[in-house]
Image (cartoon, rainbow, N blue to C red):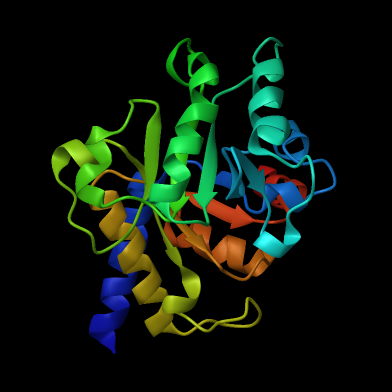
Length: 245
């Protein structure tokens, strides 16, 4: 038990050293009252949109049955980003595109839609970082993609240096490591497991994000204390205000 506690506090300390300032990831942004704009107003570090291929377009929805006419990636995100880039409100952030269909099916359409906007991803002091999550290509091929396409990394994958350079962060499902519901106390063993995962990402120079974690203040506080760099939330305003205190 003493050995486990020592390991936990060691990992906690090293997490503070490399974790840096907390950042907000706007999960399922498109379900908010004002998609994209709510996240940008609160200076979210990362904004997520799930996409499905329909014809020659990418539609944003949580499931194929939830697809609505007009809700395309271009209309909801790419065009608004271009408009924002012409204002003083523009700042650097990630647009995470979570691919729900097979990568081989999605990529040709995705590339076609992104290319007209690639100037927003490549030039200037302020830019949008495109990050692919969900159904990704083999990690050994990351370096083969256009320089404006980056990837959400996975733990326990040993990336070659040239592929790791295209990984913006490491992410994993909280439920794989703990069944804690975000209330009361979490076990010391769970804390150690979570901290170990975060620390392993830091060892390779990458920030860490848990998805599927309880979306509560207690959990936000816990993950931040363990060194998680990015807080995944559906409550962008509330989480942003929480970390400003």
